[in-house]
Image (cartoon, rainbow, N blue to C red; front, side):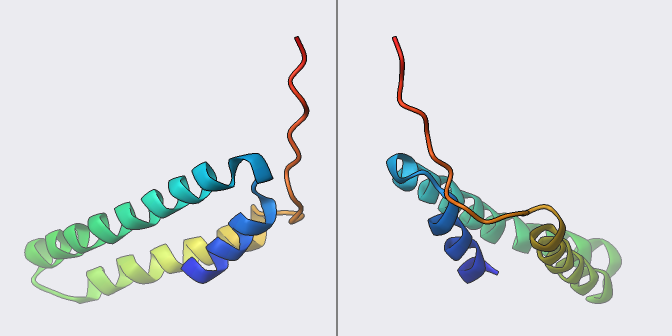
Length: 85
């Protein structure tokens, strides 16, 4: 999913904000990498089973894929208007 995310980011981010957009996306991806093991460990600790932990990971992947299908819409670059004074 990360590769798909970077492809979409590079296609739609404004050229003037490519760095900050990529940074925010990278931060979000890294936070998911920190939070997911904590949540999975908590689920396993509370239930003594990997079933719900795997269900959590599967549901997160499914929601991520469905968000691309139903929320993304038309993929085109965002163009910023020039600043007027």
